Length: 234
Ligand SMILES: [Zn+2]
Image: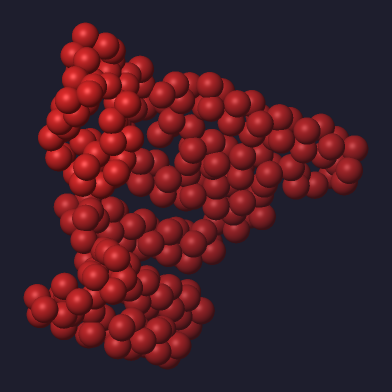
């Protein structure tokens, strides 16, 4: 058995280079054994893809079990009210969030987000149906869900392009929170008073803006960016 002369890591008999620091392996007492099997696969496709189907089946079974148990309990506990529909709806929403991404390998992020947003909209619609509240659903809940969904899609799109930049991620996230809150207050105001009198959301937006300015400066100045990268290990 050899050890790397540079970093000291234990080396496999088949290693010609240290896998960590790439220092060539020269041990006259133990020549490289090229015939022995390597400790890791060298060709793509040798590692079997992780089986996520089992996890999907288990998750589905758990959610169905919860839905059925609550449905049965509803027959005995307050049978006049359909409270179990809310739990069943929540289980269906969780299923849509969790299981399709497990089954469809490499599912596109935007498709996944669209599915998630659709699941939320459907669940809240089911609640509105149960409470006979179509007016608040269409006037308040749906616009907020769509606004949040649009921002989420935008966020997903930007982060997909800049997935390795932590600074960009933090900036886009901060900006999205500010915009979302303004939208929420706009829709609430419009629903309650038919006018828009921005108040608390502007405070949140200003805080987000205040956070964005130093981040923007750090992003623009290469020396600062490097300093932040080193200090925060990003
Ligand atoms: Zn090494």
